[in-house]
Image (cartoon, rainbow, N blue to C red):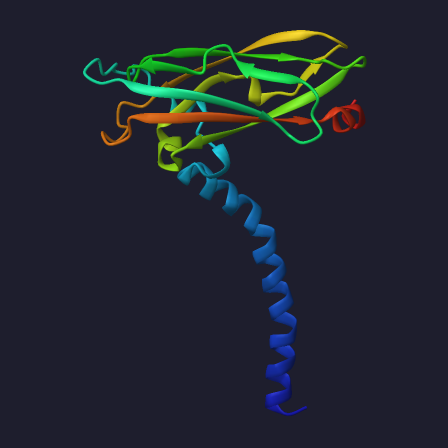
Length: 179
């Protein structure tokens, strides 16, 4: 076998191995990218992200808007109890969302968050959120679900409004398989 054939053979073996490694690494890389940029509503919720003593910035207010929607096949009702609130950066805030299973059978749901503008996601910290877990409701049952959060005082001054949106998905079949 000549040197050119050997080199081609090495490339033919290494290229698929490198492609597999790159594909395998894409999931954690994408997750890190989303957490840094706030893409897909990923925000940093680890305890290390929470300041020990957040300073409340009373000199400015941020308008927080709440938006909800259901995925196409989700029959529940889902809305915020208040569509917006004024907060001070650094102050713990609480919003409540109400869901109701309007069907005649038990169902499970999962809420997926998004934050707009995307740049604000890195400054929006959820301490407690119903979106961290699946919600299981009996037929005709309703539930008030809180989200406790704060906005980092380091939020750029030109951001005056943050929209926190949730899309509710039916995960009944997925939850049944998990149990």
